[in-house]
Length: 194
Figure 1 (cartoon, one colour):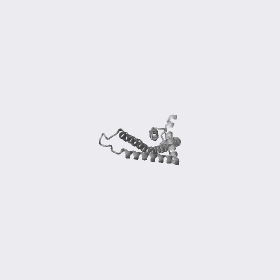
Figure 2: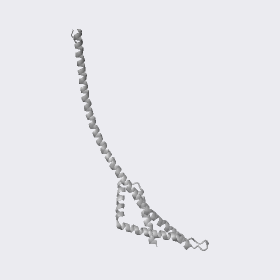
Figure 3: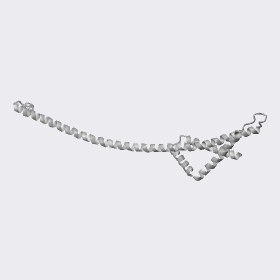
């Protein structure tokens, strides 16, 4: 019986250690590897068999301890022996140990499901951020190209604006000259020459 309880206690401590490690804030790669190992173990038929056997044994111990621990003690204190109290304490201990083993046996797959979703979410987030960085770089180079073409167009427009301004000044000067000749007055350039 002591070997049986030692194995149960060892199983309980192992489950507690596994749950402790799973709930720690681990790096992404470690979580990913833990998920990969868990999926490999879950897919193994031998591991499934071992888990089913342990679950049946622990469940039967839990049910037996619940049944035996639920027996009431005699109301008369004189009839209660130390052996009866010890038996009741053993059954309560077995209820706690087997109950926690079953509870942690349910918690570990749930936590692994959460970790798998977390790893998947972090992977998609990394992919999206990588795509966003690449598109940002592409947008930046595209914006630089557009800026260069716009600057070239602006220089051309300024040059054509200066050319148009010179043409306008020349036409105004020519028109003034023609009007002055028709009116018989001297132009500004002729006044300078005198």
